[in-house]
Image 1 (spheres, rainbow, N blue to C red):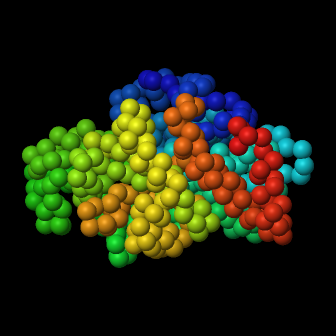
Image 2: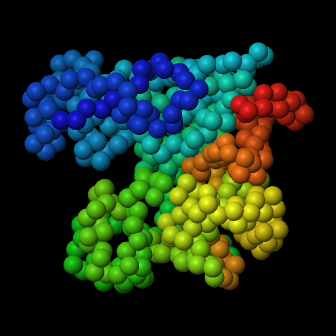
Image 3: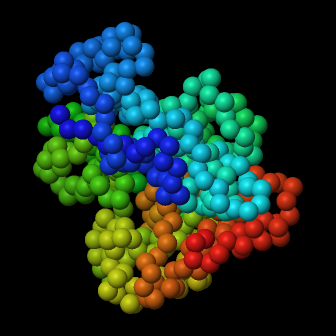
Length: 435
């Protein structure tokens, strides 16, 4: 049976990952699972393996092997929430990790809530260790007897409503023990699942949202699946994706009914998301995907990705070798209202108001009628620093503006009595190049 790897539980690095499961898979080995339990897992007898490890825990409540086995059993069943809790106990991760503070004055103490599994917003990069004292709380490992460290702000980084509903429920339990202000309350995050977004954002004038529905794998593999989809209003081509995956992984376009079964067979998960395909191809044959971030009620351009392919992400778009594409993106970054126009800007503001997130964003395209094609809108929108080559210098001001705005939001929430001038001075005091 394959083993997983995990980092030292106290490895409090400035590069602390939002995806602790990925960290676990790279660092140290899981405890030995025991021959009998390993055999049951290898034979696919998951329920029997679960019962075996449950008995081990009754005999020894501190057994790391039992927790490791339950992690494997729950993960095999697709129950990531319970799997994550047992993984943390198998690796003896603490529920609270203290990250280093390297500033000179009094820090702003922040409690950062993360899921052990994927589905987190990458907001920890805004919590600079010369301004903030960050305490990371792994929500699946939280227990009532754990005292919350001193904090003046809670940043909820559990951001994927489609796969982290259980973790968000834990977040609500944790918040009940604190009176501190919260960035991205869990109820607002829970409302940003793809199907929910399609319903509520699709009603905004100027928004074209894809029809979206979750289906059991068996229904999509059935001979009657294509007819059922048509009866529900779907048309080919359509998109099918496994919830919880990003960056284009396990996400396919199905051109015709005859391709549906094979496409579904290649995707993981017992439930799959079906979305109507929105054609964002322009007159020049390129597809454009804009990303706009919402921070404290204001809109900030993040990037414009241009590609010949329908599945478009910035890292795979046709930007590197196309100076005309970079020039178009530069115009968008320097003058978003002028490029998008007042109608689209009003639509984006309506989307931001409807989402109600302190930190979130939208990926979208535009059709020939000027409608906003809704690709994704939630709290997990990431902002990456550009590559160091001079040709990307035009992107740096927009990214630095977002970093400053987000840190200002966090500082203002943590220190409501501080003047805006003092808050901005603290942010600008961070040496250039490490902000």
